[in-house]
Image (tube, rainbow, N blue to C red; front, side):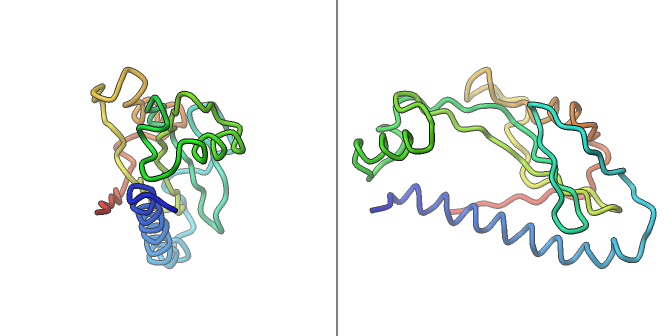
Length: 156
């Protein structure tokens, strides 16, 4: 049995994936008509970001920092505690303290750079480990002023 929160998160992920595909389709034509890349692609990796190819595009997933949620029974509502512990254990995750890694993809289409989500900015209201998006982007060699579009979604 899924909780309302889990179904909402799943819908949000599906929405973000759909937005990425729609944006990618719209921008792919623009990429095909221009041979000179605005932002060169890179094969560098580091702990604060991860790059991979997606067709002709390159995706850099940048970290906004870990978000400690604490006791999983307080975060995963509507799911029996024992099931939550089993799910976490099967995923090789701690079963007593839940920490979510917040990530935002930056997609390099060759002539456009699109950021999906804005992270926490410099806010520290969710703890000292969040709000690292700008520094993670800098570590990945992505300048804020080079971002051409920002795609955000809001799920109910």
